[in-house]
Image 1 (cartoon, rainbow, N blue to C red):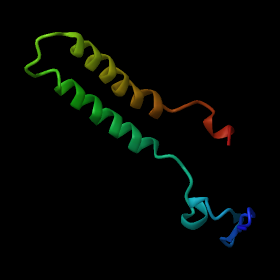
Image 2 (spheres, helix red, strand yellow; image 1 turned 30 degrees about the horizontal axis):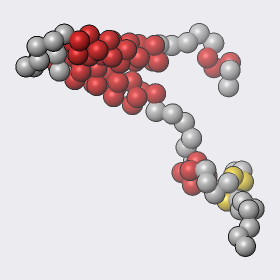
Image 3 (cartoon, rainbow, N blue to C red; image 1 turned 90 degrees about the vertical axis):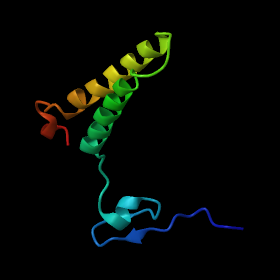
Length: 88
C-alpha cells in the first residue's frame, strides 16, 4: 500500500512540500499586471465583436456589460492601495 506521507524538498531556505511549485522555482506570487493586460485586451476584443451581421441587440448588451467589467478590472486591480505594505 502506498504511503500517505508527503516528502519535503530542501530548497536551502525552507523545507516545503514537493507539490508546491515555489519550492522548485522560488516564486509564488500572482501576475496582477499580466491579468490586467489580458483583461483589457479581452475587453477591447469584445467591443470589436459589436461590429457584425447580427440583427438583435441582446448580444450587444451582453458584450457591452462583459467588456465594461473587463475594462474596469485593470483600473481596480492596479490602483495603488494606501498602506498595502503594512499587511504583509
